[in-house]
Image 1 (cartoon, each protein chain N blue to C red):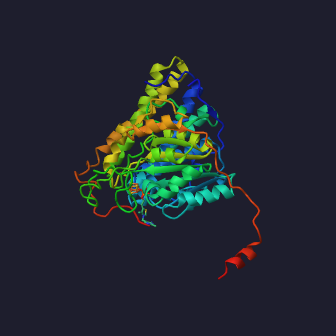
Image 2 (cartoon, rainbow over the protein chains, first blue to last red):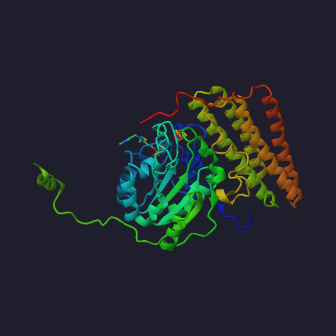
Amino acid sequence: MGQAEVITPMYSSKDYKSTVKPIWCPGCGHFGVESSLFRALAHLNLPPEQVGIVSGIGCSSRIPAYTQCYGFHGVHGRALAAATGLKLARPELTVVVTSGDGDAFSIGGNHFIHACRRNVDMTLLVMDNEVYGMTKGQPSPTTPGDWDSKIAPGGTGVNPFAPMAVALAAGANFIARGFAGDPNGVAKILVEAIQHPGLSFVQVLSPCITYRPEEKFWKKTVHPNPVAPTRDPAEAGHRLLSDDGFTTGVFFIGDRPIYTAAVGVGEGSLDEIEEHLAI
Amino acid sequence: MNAAINSLDELLTHAHALEHEAVERYEELAGQMEVHNKPELAQLFHKMAALEQQHVDKVKSLAGGQPRRLAPWDYSWQTEESPESVPVGGGHYRMNPYQALSLVLASEERAESFFSGVATHTTDPVVRETATQFALEEKQHAELLREWLTRYPKPAADWNQDLDDPVSQE
Ligand SMILES: Cc1ncc(C[n+]2csc(CCOP(=O)(O)OP(=O)(O)O)c2C)c(N)n1
Ligand code: SF4
């Protein structure tokens, strides 16, 4: 234990928890992700009122209701747009976007790409269960094409989306993957992600035990990244494209310039602008 | 094998996190069971949380106050989380008392094995004595739970079948 960092506790996980009880199915991976997030915030000693947690819609997107931090439960797929506005208007806040694979990669796919490209300083935490949990089990962009279910007999036959490779290509500045069954490991990744400037993308494999019960066995499939993260996008791209999707750890730490709002002086008052726009 | 713990301060730091996280996880499970209308199981998990809280208080009094806190990933656990926490993914909204008690029993057994491992590998006699005492208390919990288990039937083969899935939609 010689090297361990001793924390002077000011906040503990429970300081970030609201009194609203999660309605997730017991056993859902999202519970593990929630624990990780609160452990990470406690480790960083961030006052809850200095953190904004923004989501879209989905089981995963319910986290803003379960926290004492500022929470914004937004529109399906649009969490990143709302969070971008929040961060640019209130740069002193730590902004974390909590989303699902449906919310972030399907209906929110375009926001995902352009949020990575813009590189605003915030963290995107996607709880990826390779299914739409909330709407009862439709395939999502990350569902394997041969996943056979009542709702998609024989599977969709479509290649799954590769979120980390897309994030890298689009310009995200920190890219990592965790597993919900390892909340301390995910907490460590989230601490690094929050501390790193720019858009940090963290994909957490989070089993949906109700519509994808076989995902319980992910705990036997995940394996740690044997190599240190790279700062070279070309090397990261090579690793991500040859990865099996179950490697956990940090893959890429970039130094791309972050986007901050250029606060200019507008021409004319609000009333004049309104007058201009009037039909 | 546990990483060697060779000072009382290190032992109490670990014991406090282990017991405290067990309380939090049992309370979380109790909340889940309340939400899913399983009052009997909610009561069991509240009861376990209260029992573990007694251990938290005992560790604090041995430490003479709040023990140190480490980064979550810096503890010497051999499990993903602290050993007495029911693992994420452990519960199910259709589990019966037998399954709930089995989860609790497994947690107590992991805690016992953690403390006996510390007692076996430490070079410090005070750590050995304290860890042996902690292991004994966990063993007593485990024995009680094994006895409770005999009172409940094992789950039926189709225990997790549900024609009306649990999630609400938006
Ligand atoms: C505009 C709009 N379209 C569709 C929906 C229906 N809807 C709600 S949640 C959801 C998918 C959620 O899946 P995911 O983001 O993967 O989260 P999970 O529930 O699996 O955690 C959909 C399609 C909606 N609420 N709003
Ligand atoms: S439906 Fe799936 S994702 Fe939603 S709460 Fe249940 S287990 Fe979790």
